[in-house]
Length: 325
Image (cartoon, rainbow, N blue to C red; front, top):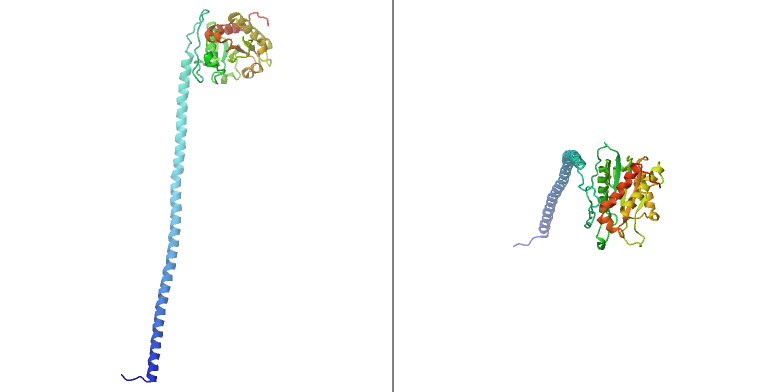
């Protein structure tokens, strides 16, 4: 091999530099194209995604609006259905109440009055177990008297310990109130048997209204025996009120043998709530028929005798018998 001259060697080097330069330019152009293509694709994808996202938002709002209307309509239908059900239930209840009222009007307690009768009240089970009450109004062909069975429809009242029979005051009050009603009906009067907070008490009109309660079933002292009677001093007819309480005191003592416990009348009796509810022309009184502790035997074993004392006291008043206060 012949040795290259310096000029030839320089020429070859120059050609190599030119080829290298051209190759680099070619590579640079190719790389720039790829970069531009990549950037184009990248920004194109971003624009495409933006368009898709915008269309999705529009579609979602359209779908949401479209679905909301049936939901609102469904809720309206649901409310309309519930209203219809309530109206139907109201009609059923009114029908049942009317039927129950008709049945209770014809219902009569099978307790004929008998002076020698000794009907025993059985002890209550735990809770308030009340005797049935015919609370419907009797026909108004005769003069009307109202009887309130103390605590009925409200709570148990005083509760006796098991050693004294476990009696509930409300049961005793109701039993005696039913006897009183029977006695007054037998005497020719119409009688309303009312609960403690009966709505009919507001503006109630009758010849007389007597509420029956029992006293404590706890031992107080040996003097805690006998009965109490009270009316209100805020009365349009104080003379009638005094005559009613006098008749009750006199007849109740004569028939039951229990003594009037005048010193034990409390403010709860003189301010008894029905006094402020009934009509001003209705003469009203409340009687505490005896102490469930010391008077337990007569109250539970002879409720008919207790009822007779109350009934005769009321009849004494409505018949205008001459009983001085």
